[in-house]
Amino acid sequence: MPDSAKKGHLVAVIGAGPAGLYAAQYLARKGVQVVLFNRDIRPGGLAEYGIFPDKHKVRQGLKAQFQRILRMPEVTYIGNVIVGQSGDIRLDQLRHAGFQAIMVTTGAQKNHWLGLPGEDLAGVYQANDIVFHYNHLPSCEKKSYNFGSQVAVIGAGNVMLDIVRYLKLKGNTGVVTAFARRGPTEVKFDKETLEPVAECLDMEAIRAEVEFVQPVTERIGRDVITFFPASGECPKQSFTV
Ligand SMILES: Cc1cc2nc3c(=O)[nH]c(=O)nc-3n(C[C@H](O)[C@H](O)[C@H](O)COP(=O)(O)OP(=O)(O)OC[C@H]3O[C@@H](n4cnc5c(N)ncnc54)[C@H](O)[C@@H]3O)c2cc1C
Image (cartoon, rainbow, N blue to C red; front, side, top):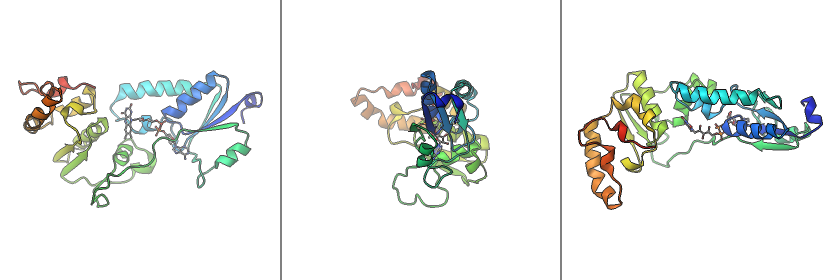
């Protein structure tokens, strides 16, 4: 227990992702002594292991903020520790150690499946596993994934594009098709994430899709044409966040 904690409040924060780190900062600013227990060796959670390696600006910006929090004298960081019934330390043990409050900020750890037949077949992967693999999370780094020559990615957000970018950089994947529940006006990625893969887009397929959904989107007042300029150029300037 840190010496200064004997005089004031001592709180255990479990999980050092963005939620845990900013909670620690908030408490530390109020003079509370905080010990952060984190399963991963490195702090940051998905901000460390979820963001594409080449997104240097985002990564460095977040890392600098996290380091400032971890340098606060009220904050102690302990990595590589799993808190839980079958982990390295249990909640009741933390209580006995003198923590007056325990904050659990362990993120969304469970993968969710769509409930589709065939999800358990070889070659069907969860995005998290792939993202952790290319971000060298120790538990996923050594696993191998066989993508074959045609890949379907389900979803239309930044993670989908990051995975497309990873496959492009790997170099031996033929066709990658993204399947989305909603239409082109509802994609959930930003322009910057699209840019590195824009040159690989099948513009004819996108044109056909836009023409197909246009009558419907017009009826609900959404201008799908802004997604795809009449000139037939790459649509990257038309995406909005
Ligand atoms: C694949 C993916 C990619 C993403 N990419 C981006 C992106 O590019 N940009 C962006 O802004 N957002 C991105 N997000 C969203 C963002 O990363 C999350 O919203 C954010 O990280 C959630 O913060 P959190 O602190 O709640 O949880 P997490 O970041 O998940 O952190 C949880 C922490 O708890 C620790 N932990 C878990 N269980 C235990 C335990 N039992 N004992 C001790 N510690 C434990 C973990 O080690 C981890 O450090 C992405 C999300 C995903 C799923």
